[in-house]
Amino acid sequence: MPNDREQNPGPEKEPKYSFLKETIKPKPISGEKLFRQFVRIAIYGVILGAFACVGFFALKPWAQEWFRGTPDTVSIPADEEPDTEPAENEDPEQQTVPVLDAASGSEIMDSMYELAEEGQKGIVTVKKAATAEQWGADTDQSARSVTGVITADNGQELLILADNSICSDAQSWTVTFADGSSYAASLKKQDRNTGLAVFSVPHSDISSATWNAVKVSVLGNSNLMTRGEQVIALGNMFGYADGVGYGVISSGTYKMSLYDGDCDIIATDIAAADGGTGVLLNLNGEVIGLISPDIWADRGMNTANAYAISDIKTVIELLANGQSVPYIGISGTTVTGQIQESQGMPEGVYVIEVDPDSPAMAAGIQSGDVICEVSGQTVTNLGAYQRAVLETETGTQITIRGMRQGAEGYVEVKFTVTVGSKE
Image (cartoon, rainbow, N blue to C red; front, top):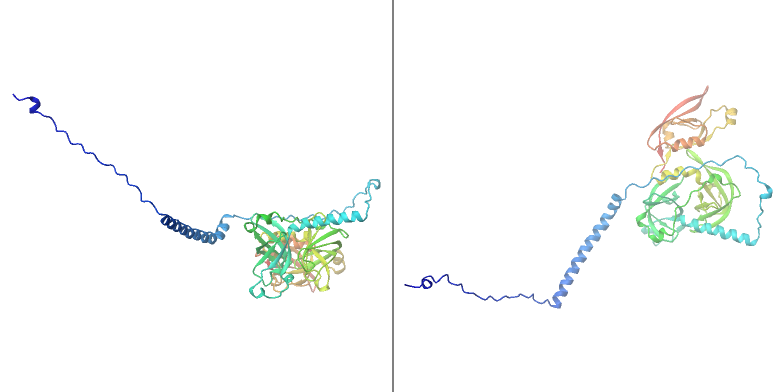
């Protein structure tokens, strides 16, 4: 009988095979190939960087306009009139008489010079950008530049007040700050009636070094200035930039007639060149006047005379906010009580002249009319009329009531005026 083990030998064992494990090593890169790859990556980087730069500069103006938001509203409060009540007499025993000698005089001059140096931080020179025709020409630089004062900061721009004579025949301007650096500026708004303009320089354009060298000037109260007080003149009133002059107020009783109002004039004994512009500072370093070549130009004046800053603060605020200055076009004077009695005129503003092509002319206002009411506000003098006009908005229609002399005396007249601007 066969053996079970022989009859059932069991499953056959599978043969075992030994496999070789092969490790694939990367082919070594030669130095030349590595250099070529590096050059290729560098070229791609330069190309991408160039496209990025082009895109950045192309989109920068749009991005700045989109993300900068709304500028802050500039507010310049009007100044109060000085207190006319006499001050109480001080005890003579408590008064001290200062000793005046050469040393004290030198200290005074040093102190005033320090004030001038500090005030200079808020003063700039505004120039017309030279055209291609002027690059090689021997042009009068003073005729293409005026003094400007850093008046406000709206959070996005530095706003610079200057004489608007720099606006004629120009499309671009540069502003030179106290540290000597120059930046492109744009015209924010101008008013040809007062002869003022406001320019702007974006924050983003100004370097940190310039920021450390400049400041916004403080606009003082010119109503408090009296004859004989010392003042400092800064600007190009001598026919060149960065001039400094010292003097006193020789008079503060005169006014400059403008359409729809007037402005106090601060006259000084400081010499000035023809066409000179600048600012007047008080001894607190505050701006109290804007030196203008238009003041008494027909008299051939050779002294620095300035518009009183308090009388033009409302105009400055409008221009700094990019708003037009309301304009109707009447040159007038107050009908005083004496004139009312002697001439039989009604109370109000007597119209001396009407500006041609003005809203007043279009509405039918004539010389000899007496304005009594503007947009519902009673007008008793020129100052009240001026304030009423400045409170209106350009482009709106208002009603002006007045009196006109007829065959049987004065009769009431009414005018519908569309308020304009003189830009």
